Each structure stands twice: as C-alpha cells, then as structure tokens.
Length: 391
Image (tube, rainbow, N blue to C red; front, side, top):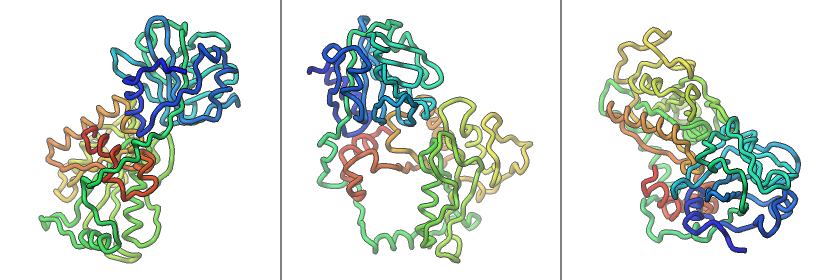
C-alpha cells in the first residue's frame, strides 16, 4: 500500500508526537469504506493517526493513544486531538472533554467524540459536528465537503532515530550519590543576599496535570528522607489545587526549615474563565496574595479581598518563577494556553523576576529516557525539541 500522506506531512505530524514514524494499517480504497473493514485492520492497534481526504483537496483527521475496539463506549484520552493541514501547515485542535475523546463505534470508522467521524456507517462520508469534544472551524477543517475520496489509518510506531544519543552531553551532570549530597548541601546552606529575605520564594506555574504538586512532593520527600504527599496531587481534567499554598521545605523529619519556599497554584487552562487567572499571577508575583487564598476563576484577587497585602515586603514577593511543563504535551499545547504562558512571562520580565523551566514526564516523551533517565542530556529528541528552542 502506498501512503497518500506525503513525507513532509508525515514529518509534521511526527514532530508533534515524538521519535516516531507512521505505519499504514488501513486504506479505504483498498480495504473498503466500511466500519467493519476499518475495525478488522485497526482494532487493538495504538497509538493511531486517522486521516481523511476529500475532493476539495482537504486533509484532516485525528490522533489518539487509545486502541480502537467495538465496545460502543467512550474512552478517555487527554492527549487526543483532531487536525487539518491549512495552507501547508498543520493545525491542531486538542480534545476539550478527555473522557469522551474517542468513541468505540462498531459500525463506523475513526470516531472522535461526537465531533468528527471518518467513514460514517458504510458510507464514504464524514460526520462533522464541532463543539463539546473538539472545537474547530468546519469550513477550515474540510471546506464543508463531507464526501471522502480516501481514508487512511496509521499506527504510530517507535523510530530508531529516537534512540540516537549525542556523544557529548550538552549539559554535564555527575550522576552519583556524592554529587547528589553535594547539591542538597548547597541548598541547605544557601543564604539570600539580603538579610530581610530569610527564604527565597519560588512560584510553580503550569497547566492542569503538568505535575506542579507532584514536583513539590518529590523535592520535599528527598529532603525529609521519606515519601511525603503534603500537596494534593493526582490525575484530573481540572486542577486538584484550588488554593494558593506556600510550602516550607524541611531537612529531615524534624529538621530546620530550608532557605527555600515553594509556592503552588491552581493549574492553567486554555479556556477563558477556567483555571488560574493571569491577573492572580500578578498578585502572587507582587506579594499581594495571602497563603491559602481560595482561587476563583471568574473573579481574580482584588484589593478589597480578605487577606490582601496592600504593601507587601520584599520577603513576600516571588523571587523566582518556575514553569512546570509536561514534556508530552508541549507540542500539542493549545494556542490560548501558550498565550497565557507568554503573558505571565512578560509580566515576570517587567518585574525582574528570574525564570526557569522544569520538564516533567520526559520518560514518556522520549523512549530513550524510559530506559535510563540519565540519558536526558544526550537525547537527540529532547535537545531538538526543547533545548533547541521550542520552549
């Protein structure tokens, strides 16, 4: 079978997913424009990319990590998206409702929520209804031409290119117990340059599910010497953190406080009026927000709010801003969420707050790191996508 998706288009898709390539499983003009033919070739294969083509020259489809089956049930996939090629460029529309990302319909082809269905029943047509699961412009997606000339489904398979290691790491790290102890001691003995600031305040910012709270719990566990779960962490489509929290790290079970405070926040979301408000970020950076403040997505903190610090001291302000990003989702980050992050970055720049990025779930983003995390600074994929300037 010959792929209708050209190499440039395939590379555009794979660059968004990781060190993978496409293996053609199903081609409707060969196997049939029926749900039965699709399921015969594609069930229990994952992840997959489904692509539709129409007489107007439009190319569009969807991606899911979930294997197809004929259960009739919806399946959860927070990384699913539908897409189209517009003027030679890939345009993605991430799933809005992850629990309803894909429906396992036995009589149809690839079924993305109730928004996009390729091969509807036994007909070479598209069902298109943007809305609750995926928001897209139908005219831009497929030109409102619902007659398919072809439908292809590809399995996303690991490419050996992803296992290529850079001989010389771009950052030199000594991975041993002695170095770990040295780094921990440098944090224990750190002293801010101003005596009026006994502890440096580090603010953690990231989208829902990026792992901000888990990052704090991990750092806290290392210094405490046992596993802790002080910050609420888990997997959810909405933020599990609903209050602004300032956590003081301690050395040992009954040790003295470390000179660093990690501040956790509600997760960022791409939709307006959901998740952490950018105006609340300004209040946090400037030291106005009190600890345990209950976030309200529709009404940010204002000077008349209970506990509002009208004249914060330098010790109350944020001294370092840390963006915590899920490495598996940077490529499919919604445009509106990227705009929020950019607005936060500009605000921090104006206030002179230094910034850094923490990448989580790198082992899921690059198979090389699943084998050994110490390879992170030798990963071609990580260097090209993240150190190379995408962030």
